[in-house]
Length: 204
Picture 1 (cartoon, rainbow, N blue to C red):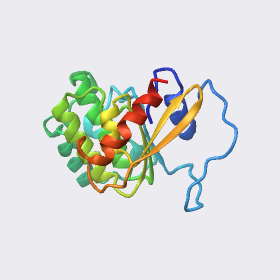
Picture 2 (cartoon, rainbow, N blue to C red):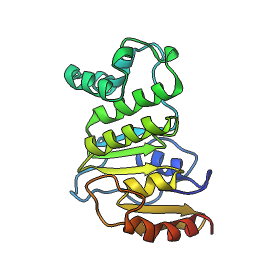
Picture 3 (cartoon, rainbow, N blue to C red):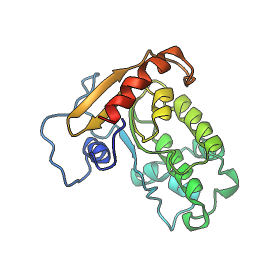
Picture 4 (cartoon, rainbow, N blue to C red):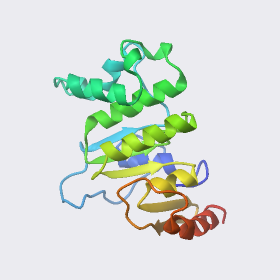
């Protein structure tokens, strides 16, 4: 999902996650498998929302801890390694850079394993090389799940999305891309064909 700042993208994600907002939601939220959506959503906000008194490892396993479940320590360790924080697992958020904190928050979200995942600019604080690595990791871990990604990066949306939604005062406009099992190249003909229409929608 793309759109100008302030158009309501983050508010929409919070509404879908069942969180309090200043907006009002009328209607219903359903899933194609006809099971309730509540309790099956993982949400990553723009702010990392890490607990400052917990270590990286403890923050990554927070969901299980809050549910009073025993965290899968092997999976925690694997995700921490894959986001590049293996040498920082015992550090607390105050000892991390902004990009490291965002990677910790991403690992915490990926740890949940829910069928629906809402990501609000999850790669915005990362340098280009790390950003690409985290995109590839997220695509692999979240394969087969329903993911709604909010981003201001058109290239990122074109490379990662199956359907692009542009949001404006007029509402939502959908732009479909050919399905892909991998991150697309920006030189892919289907990407080249759609980017003009998306760009026009964003600037109308």
